[in-house]
Image (cartoon, rainbow, N blue to C red):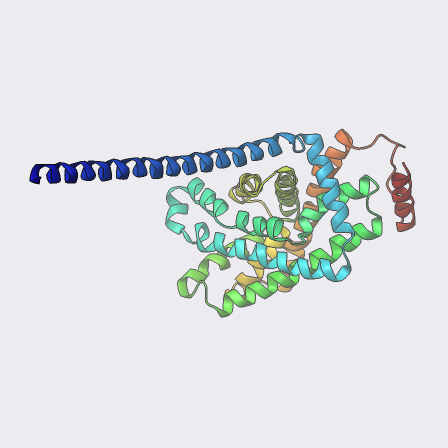
Length: 337
């Protein structure tokens, strides 16, 4: 009996272990199945993203031109209040970028003396790309960008001359107010205190020391690059693409020492607040006026008109609207077609 009893206990123990083993296999198989389903679901989502990207509008120069037209038409349709408010926001965005550029590469005199090329790249890479990125992704009205995209919309008959001038003028005014606001805040916060203030003073003084022709030509070259950044970012299909589209041209224009009117609104005002011996006459006539004219030429002619001549409507096919009445008639005709 004792042996039988022991055998019975042994059999029961073996059966118990077997049960645990198969239960464990069932648990593991369930976990593996769940893991497999998660992998399939993840793969499906990845495949869906690939499919969506493959069926999206192709990234081509022609597609980029059409997107820029749509962007410009949307900006032209904004109310005066919207343009002014968003213009102030963009003035602050660009001011933040300029402040970072000054605080970083602009405050590296040792590097500038030993390796001026590296110092220029450093100043260009960390600063203004951030400002334009905030405007394009977060939303804003930057006059220098509007010089290109709203002009393109005007050339295609998607905006009127009145809307063009409203967009340019109010965005520029808003940018100026935003730049002054940020300069005042940066000075009050002592972002660059003491000896560090010598950097904005030196940069601002150099900017008003240019001849009219130098400032004009640097303005043309600068906004050619800035508007190409806006143009390419418009054609990008995700935020990362927009960031890269902004980074390369903006880094280039800063590293080349070119002149951007909105950035200069902040830089010169901040330099004056820090103690630069610059008069209002020098601020406006020696820099802001020629640079703004150059920025208009760079955006409206070098970018917008170039792409309109390459991809725009043929002469007589879609003549630019001369008034809002003509524009409404064009919209009505398009809807009827």
